[in-house]
Image (cartoon, rainbow, N blue to C red; front, side, top):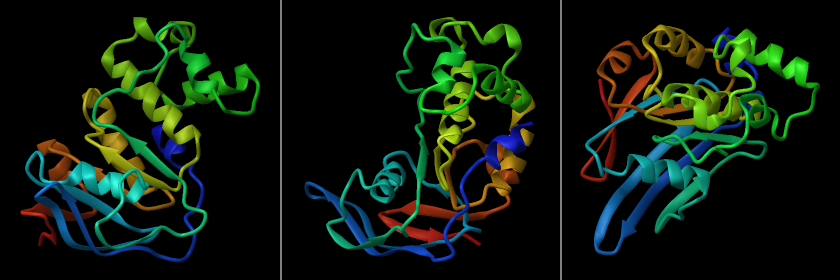
Length: 212
């Protein structure tokens, strides 16, 4: 089911990635200061902090969308970053579910349909629905399926439980633990956060601090 989707990722290289003494400013405001973090195949981090504290900025730095003003970010060769944004992205509204999912993939349509059905995210009658006909929760599922179809070995998940139905939350929680690379999650979902099995880190006043 959902576990098979997360196991589809590529294996993370044996070497560690790292952020060392990273600082980031926007104008006069220092968003992040002296951030240090190691990334390995077993990294499971829940990232918390007030809105605007720099959590999404940290994700953008790891992806290379932003550059640090100070410090060094080392992402190992062979790293493939998969990023799930907080809000659903602009999927092509006129494409069907299966057209969206098969983009960039190799395989017969029947095989890809079987894969989607096996993950338990959609029913057979959903395959020919256009994206505009989907609920926001179904679009979230489609985003997640497309993200993992690209076979990333690093996951950066920004509020991944937004719009996900309760029946999927437990499966989602278990699947994260089996992903073959680092997983960093930003979440304000109290139920999810209380059950998260990884380390909990907080950004507060620009500092990244591991919570006990």
